[in-house]
Length: 350
Image (cartoon, rainbow, N blue to C red; front, side, top):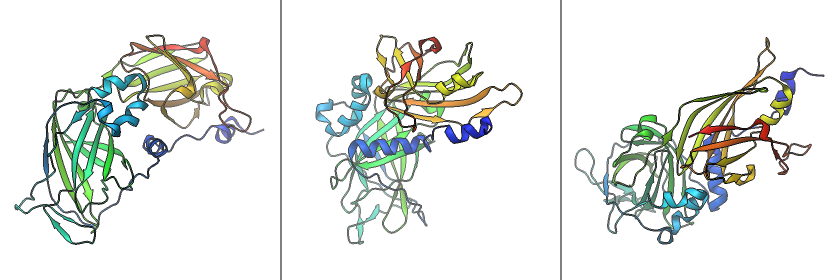
């Protein structure tokens, strides 16, 4: 019989490579569209363009492009809908470089297209956790490929995906995860967003658009929390709540192998402060689990789990976290037969 570490290595379920890959896969599945690949440019063309957006809101019925994304948010859909900024007709991306030349792109056959803006921003959403915007490609820009770093009010954040809503539509949905904690917690009325657009020639240009609105939100946070049980200890940290997602990290110290077998599978039921309970397969969730470490002196198992949940009520006062037992067959395939372990539950305060 192998060591406990060897058993963990063989049996511990494979976890996602990263949150970014999980999100990309989910978008591809939901929208049945290929996401755009990021390219590294050999040269940089220092061009800056500026767009001032007018604020206003529209309903989801008038924004079919947002319908699928809003639907993923579940109970948070209505709040998120009210935070969408719709740009008025006639707004375009335009500008000049440092010496006063017009923006130069390329048309479909590779000719220079003087004064052709790369894209027009039509709609923007921002809640402190996520920036979502729709970009309509300009004439001569049949494809939009962006760099994966997006600067917002001078801070570096991560572009999760760019996906064309319908093949050939020329309208691209772009989602950015807010990585800067100060930006996420602020309550901005103005966003200066800089993206890098890759060109067919192999170069890239920087485009900056500015959005002003009183509709923007910020994340809610909570202090770290610690719970002690007969089976171990769990610490809750990095709790952030916004309509686009609720995220937190659990750091476990588990005394016995039996409880570890239950907790390692990242399956749980949860209940919000209004009494709505979610089964594991009800949650639109990305998960990450750290490598497992066994303390040789105590025999305890230590590991971390991080969660991003899209459809849990971000306005809830708390989450009842209820570990689930079972759910997998002998081959390790998920079959949805898990049962809640109420005796192992705890309340995470928001």
